Image (cartoon, one colour):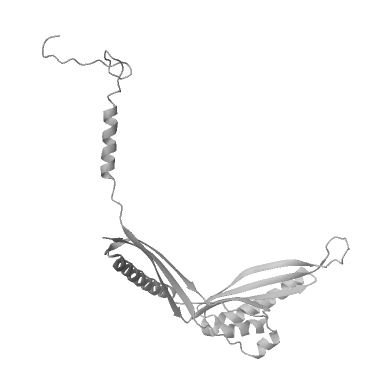
Length: 255
């Protein structure tokens, strides 16, 4: 070989360098390490954070209500029970609609079910139908709170024999929720500031925030009452106070 000439080793079919000693590691090993080093250098620095939970409850007097009235009739024949139910249900709907104000009145359930004779102990026989029960349920939503008592009285006087589902709510429920969330945010920030001072660090900004809010409407328990007594005495309804609660989960970055 002439002086000053550099010998270039040949590559085998497997991509290895052929030498007089034997096979050595492929050249491609040098190209695998470089990307790994670059990836390690580009990895983001982990943030230091403080996570807190702010809470708030806003209490207010409900001004809207929803409730349901049902007419239940029984007769030997299904047609007779249905006819009587239709007459009384129409009277109930006509009586409550003028008192519902801007609220809605709608039928939410209608059913016809057979009534069976109870078998005596030890008696084995096929069930025997003794009559039919027809039930028509009318639901009133978003009614003025001061009309709940008159609504109940009017429905009972018109023929309703079941009342339930009474629940109070707010006409400005969204506004109350926003106010509760705002106060929950202030509570979260005050907590984070206190934690930061205790740790000797400073807050940089909000990394994430998760909100949650829900109304806590008053749901009074309605006991069964004698219909004659209900017609004679106006029904008193006191809504009391209800609560809208808000929770705010906030994560702050610290210096």
